[in-house]
Image (cartoon, rainbow, N blue to C red; front, side, top):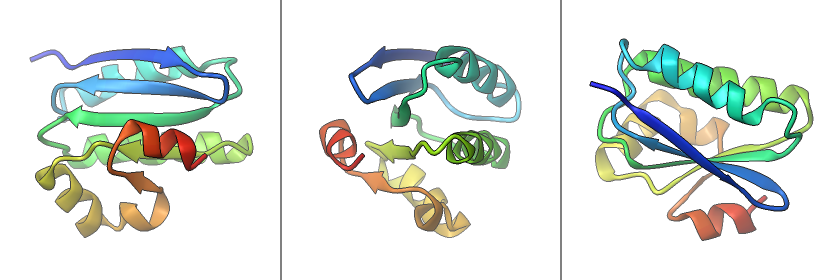
Length: 112
């Protein structure tokens, strides 16, 4: 199964849309696609996970690595539009303490 990554840019951020699950098989490609999108942008990143139903540990690693990369550049990573199962994984792994999470994209962009 392929996980699709699309994006749009605002004045202050790049919004990344992940459509599909972040599994051991899909996470490396998703990471590559996200890094290509943000390369040279110099903007905050909002990851919209509305269409993600499952996140494996490799998917969490992708988000953690991206957050560290952005933080090193003085930029923020936020996550929005989590469904209950995705939110549960974020809470159990402690990621809600590492990255701001928002109910929707509009709130995430306002929170930057």
